[in-house]
Length: 319
Image 1 (cartoon, rainbow, N blue to C red):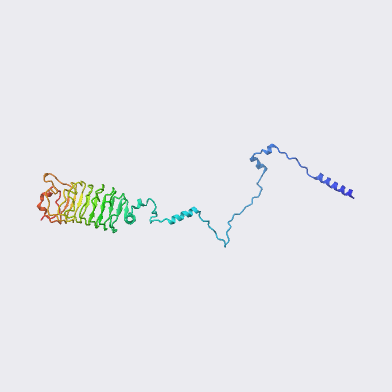
Image 2 (cartoon, helix red, strand yellow; image 1 turned 180 degrees about the vertical axis):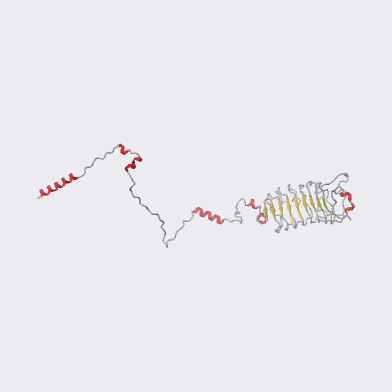
C-alpha cells in the first residue's frame, strides 16, 4: 500500500516538472545599463496610464466655530502704541519734532508759539489786534512786523535784537510811551518805521537807512526830537509828524526828502533857510514837493524867501 502511494506521488512530481516554464538567464549588457535619459521613454510609456482628477474645495467651518485672527507681531503692536501715545498738533506734526521751532517760530513768555498766536506768512508776521502788552519773540528771518491795535506800552532794547533782516515795523495804535535808546539803532536794514497813534514823548536814536517815518499823533512836544535827528538820513523820503504839539520844524532836513507833514502842531515861525539856501540863490530843492503846515499858528506870507527854492508852495495859512 505504501509502495503504491509513493509511486503515485512520484508520477505527480514528474508531470509537474515537465510542464513548468523554463527561466531564461538575465543579460546585463552595457548598452542597456548606460542608456541616455531620452532613451528611457522607450522603456516606459505613460500614455495609457489613467490620471486621477482631484477636486479642490474650501472646507467651511461649522456654524459653532469662530474664526480667530492671529494677533499682530509684538514689534508692530509696540509701534502702534507709541504713535497713539504721542500727542499731535492740528497740522499733524509733533511738538517733540526738531523742526517745530523753525516752522512755527520761537515761544512767547506763555510758552506759546508766536506764529500760532499771530499769523506768519514767509518773512512777514501779523500780530494785529491780539491784546498784546509787549513785543512777542519773533523768528530770526522776520522782515516785516505788524502789531497794530494792541496794548504795548514799552519797546525794550532786546525786542528786535539780532533781527538783521527786519525792514518794516508798524506799531500803530498801541499805548507806547517809552522806547529804549537802543531799540532801533542796531537794525541795519530797517527802512520803514510806523509808530502812529501812541503816547511817545521822546524819540530814540534811529538808524540812518530809514526811508519812511510816521510818528504822527504822539506827544513829542518841544523836546521830543533830538537836534539834527534826521540829518544823516540821506534816503529818507517821507517824514510824517502830524499832531505832536511841535513848536518848530526839525532841521536840517535830508536832501532827498519828498514829503513833510507837520499839520496840526504849534509851529509859530519859519526861517529863510528852513528849506532853501540863502547864500546860493540858484539852489533848487526839486525833491520836496509835499509840505503840509496847515493847522499851525503860522503866517506863511511873512517868510516868502523860505520856500522860493521849492517846486511847490507849502500848504498852510497865508493870512
